[in-house]
Amino acid sequence: MAATAPHRNTDGEGAGADGPAPADLVYVLDDDEQLCVSLAWLLESVNIRTACFTDADAFLAAFDPERPACLVLDVRMPGTGGFRVQELLNSRECVLPIVFVSAHGDITMSVRALQQGAVDFLEKPYDPQRMLDVVQGALRTAGDRYARRAARKAVEARLCQLSPREGEILRRVIAGEPSKTIARRLGISLKTVDTHRARIRQKTSADTLGSLIGDMMRCGLDQTTV
Image 1 (cartoon, helix red, strand yellow):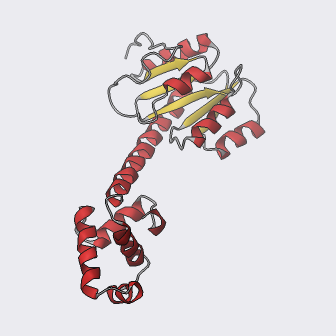
Image 2 (cartoon, rainbow, N blue to C red):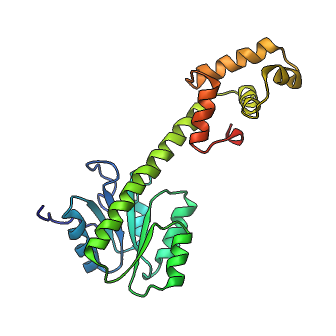
């Protein structure tokens, strides 16, 4: 497929605009503008949308944490460097997959990047096909991560509907306590426990408490979340 003109953006303009399909956007953050242009051409030749930045602060201001994407990030830049950008994104609990690039990479640098959650580390000049393969893998990872985060948020929203007493009973159910034990320990009747259990199912739109707990477990949530 013929390459299209790259979507260049060194100011952050348009980075949060609506795009085609989820996880088709690649942020490129590198102080080398020519490299940004070159990489944008390469990625958009296979219909991967790009948003390019030469300044870390501009990227951080424009970055949309709700849009599935990945980031190609240079290690060494004036001002805020790549590792600092990674730290800031991690502190915001972003699930954005990061591919580091560097003309001065070494084993220590790559290990640090990967230990902090980067999905890959490429040395400049990189092989174009290798970059395409890595970015496409990162976009697949982005799709998975954002889908899991969305599922987790949906379950958390359901749990937020519960009253403190309903949350307490759900925690005890998760811990394996039968209704009779819950009633005795809370000093309430068994009928009241059953009423609370029914309200929990109703408020969380769950067929059974077992299915609700299953949804929580799949999202990495436990009784401390309630």
